[in-house]
Length: 441
Picture (cartoon, rainbow, N blue to C red):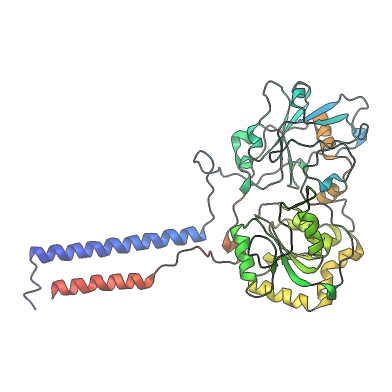
């Protein structure tokens, strides 16, 4: 035995080599584990075009400029022409001439009838009138944002968006944002709030005992976190999913389905939703103030919304609407949420508390930003003309940045996270130890 332990150069080299391999493998394992754990627990960092990290900025704050009355303006005012320079989502903007409720038709291309606005105002999409323009409007999403107005016409630029920064890189691009002077946005703290969220209607809901199902889900764009939350929820309670994500139910026309050359998806969705006690209203991200018409659909039909999204949702629920939704954020896990939904599904009295606003009415909403959007004193682009007449402009817009949604924000584990293979690691270490014993024995 002592003979084998003699420190010959060969054995010494083998021992040093094995020691080096074990040490290196251990270091790599520790580094890999640390990187995975850090990636799992820290907030993700988005990379801007050009490779740089976004600057650290305070939360964006805009001033709501439209608080003037008709008497604030002199009777003789020159006419303001607002030129919608870009298209929207690949289409030329259809300037609206009628006095319909434009809160239902984004992006609300309406400036009012002649004489309706305190300031003579016209909205046009005719680019040949660029020399007359008092302001240019550009849609923030690609590819429209690449079509900026000509710089030789010295008129203010107005940015319009109704999608959040996660899907609209323009909103945190300093080169672009510095060129604009006013913002029309879904944000309630923007210059001109214009969310895709009409005023819920007071039509009475279908009676509790006549509902055909408990929970409705319709998602055709499978954002990973909300899809995983729905998947976990479906383990504990029945969810009828009609959309492309986790689909288990037929009977709803597709998102871009047409009948007689008319898109009818939302019309059919409104009919279907009336027959469910709850609707999953999961926004595609949790950005401040980001709300879309999913919330309107659920409230109007009397299907209690189960809401995932911005924590500023209460600002969209004025008056008697304040107790009309169930917030996913109030529950630690999908299992706990499912338990509460089961309780409400079997308790008509508790369930109907979420629908009291249907009988009481909306209440006092005009002292809120969303209430003034639902019942505006002047059409949207008339408000823009009023701001131009007062010369209320910004020298560039503040950047708006939003962290993408994370699994842990909603009590979920990342299903794609790698789990360290401890069995293989121990087997490897055991094998190396065995080789060392053989060499020195």
